[in-house]
Length: 398
Image (tube, rainbow, N blue to C red):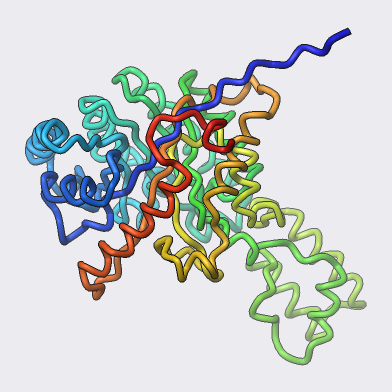
């Protein structure tokens, strides 16, 4: 008997660039679109930071911005394929604010205008505009309540975006407990919950540098706790216990305030059990594991070179590539693996299009010509693996 092979539909892949590099420098659409064209890229992710933020600019300006983008697309051959949030909304509690009126304002005054703009130019959208305050992380009941608010808000956003013809919408994965989704398990839960509640596809954006934080938030086992307690100094700077209460218990054990150290350790472990949302697993700190597990649900993949333990949004220059952990071939192979997984109907449909999007941050004091040189070198590196846009993923891997 011959085993039947499931037909797999691989996505079309495009190389894109976030125009955040142009922020405060090349601010008019005709300027950054011409720069992108000269760099060898035809697809742009337009950052709200590059003078397209609804809260700062207002609806009248955004209307003019949209018309200029449309005109420049025709004259330059460059397309704005996605809109994305910038630092402005990243710095707020936003959709998980402790005040419901602020959550409503973020939805109505920022997200809806961005979705409408995206729909009118046929672009997708990605964003990040929420965070959990420290107090919420300490209380599982409050944390769960805010998580529930977030899922409901994102479900409504997904429905609204679908009704406006937006090709795709999603949220960026992060790397600390107060910015979900930051773990593989949490990302799957968010994808499933938002899809179930909203009945419309909603995705994540995987960033190749957003796995640098999770290693700091992994749960210590009993043996490591015992080792740390034997130290004469206070808690080791690299020791993560989760909650404030856990650190208090730890210090009380060190001070000999329990009848036995084992009794104190039992209480400490029980406290860490109480706040599972505060801990990551080793797999969560692996960029390629994220791509293998969730790449097919990531229509936008932010590309940055990672040479060190921080998410610095570095370019793909020859020097940094030698020291860096992000390799284009490995990225493509990991993405292909994600499409070979068995289907799960509780998750949104797999993406038909993937935008591999360079997201290179420009220091304030960088020399503009040097910045463009680094970006051009980054484009040339990725063009070795994505020589032309729209080719199926499996062909690129082969």
